[in-house]
Each structure stands twice: as C-alpha cells, then as structure tokens.
Image (tube, rainbow, N blue to C red):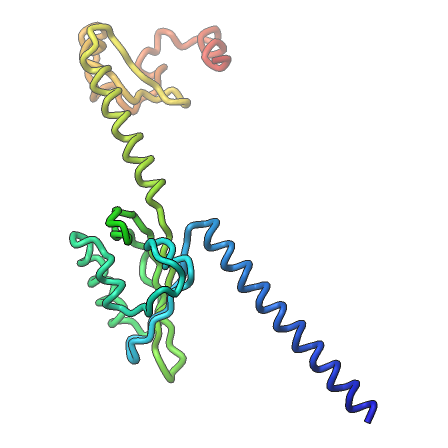
Length: 219
C-alpha cells in the first residue's frame, strides 16, 4: 500500500541519516587524531584480537591497515631499552579488573628506524563477559626534542656564565635568583647557597626602594 511504501521510505531515510552521522563522527575523530598526533588502540588479552586506529599505523611509518596488527608486532616496535616499561604496564593490567594505569612514556622505532618518543594511556574495561584494554598513543617527539635542546642551551648558558670573569646574577620574572656565578660570589661575598632561589631585594635589601621597584616594573 501507499502507507507501507511511505513508512518504508521514512525508515530508509532515517537509516541513511544515521549512517551519514556515524561516518561524519568517524571522519571527525580521524581528522582529530591526525591533528593531535594521537592514536587509539584496543586489545582483548583473551582472544589476542587487536585494533589500531589509522593514525597508529601512520605514527609507526606505515600506511593505514597495511598489515594485521597484533601484540607481538607492536612489541617489536618498542625500543629495546624501554621494553621493560611495556612489560610493567602489562603486569599492572593483569592485576586490574577495571581502572586506568598512570600515564607513561617510552620510545619506539618506526619503519625507518627513527626513534620516536610517545606518551601512552591505558584503561582496563570489564563488562563481566570479557576483559579488554583500550588506550591512546601520542607522538611527543617534537616536544621531547625541544625540551632536550632547551636544556642543552641552558647548560651552555650556565657554563658561559660560570666561566665569565665578570660578576653575573640572573633573575626570573618574579626577581628570584636563578644563577649566581663565582665572580659574583667573590664580589658580593655571598655564596650560591645564600642567593639561589631568593628574591633580589632579599639578597640586596639596601637597594629596595620605590624608585628601584618602579624601574624594574617598567622593564
């Protein structure tokens, strides 16, 4: 009947709308993973079944779904010196019915052998029928390398300051002393123990007046 056809058409339209919405959500999640350089995974320890999102393949240097993922395959990507971190995480998982492990970091070797630094989360879920584990892996290589480079520059700066014949003291934006070289110790007769971490005006109370405070605030 006309009514039956109309109802069927409405059901088909509703199904198409739901399908389109699901596809849109999947695409949005896919794009978000790529933008944040993060990936998701799921592992059923009982069956051994493993799911990787597309971006985990990309992080490892492979085309999405170019091979069937499994636990042993993933372990092969972990840096040899960091495998114990993963084994400790698995030990924690085995001791949990439900819950989330603390966030942890380790290194992996991608398809080209390049060392990458990743940050991982891991949650244990149990629906009474089966236990499975989900998690995320985020590539933090750029952040780690930037911090390493900044640390190297700071060490170099500190070496230069210490070797300088002139008295040098360095303060942060709140005027707390962060560096006090040997020449400063000799000139002001104050040791590093007496100055590092202390406020400028506590180190030199004689210069604390409104004029100097105003000048510093303007810098």
